[in-house]
Image 1 (tube, helix red, strand yellow):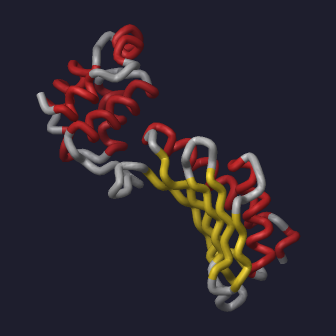
Image 2 (image 1 turned 120 degrees about the vertical axis):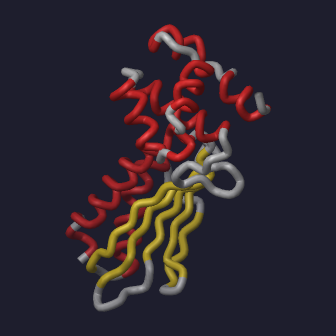
Length: 185
C-alpha cells in the first residue's frame, strides 16, 4: 500500500464511516478498484457508492475524495499545490465599480469582515479577503464591454475538498444576489 493510500485509509473518520455505512475506507477502496473507479469522474464515483452500494451521501463524498487522492487523480478545482479553488462568475450589466461594491457586500457575508484590500482601477477592480481558515476570498469585476462586466467571486487555498460543493453553492448564490441588486444599475 502506498503512503498516499495509507493516509487516505487512516483518516479520523474511518470509525464513524464504518459504524454508519458498515464498511471501512479500505473496503470501500476495494469496491471502487473492482469497479475500475479510476476511470470515473468524482460525481460518478459518488453516484455509484450511493445508488449501487447504498453508502450515505456524506460517506460517499468522503470516500470518493480520499480514493481520488490516494490514486493521484486531480479533483475538480484542485490546484498544483494540492489546495482547491472554486469560483462563480456571471456577466452582469452595470458600472464596474458599482458591481464591485455589490460583490464586496455579498462576499463580505462569506468572508465575515471587510476585505483586506480593495482596488478600483479599471484594469484591476478587485477586493481580497484573507480568511482565518487560510483561504483567500476574492471578488473581481472585469472591464465593461457593451455595458456588461464579468463578475467573479472565488475562494482559493481551500485545504479540504469536502468543503468545495458547499462553497460553490454559497458563491453561486452570492453572484445571483449581485445580479439581482438594483443598486448597481
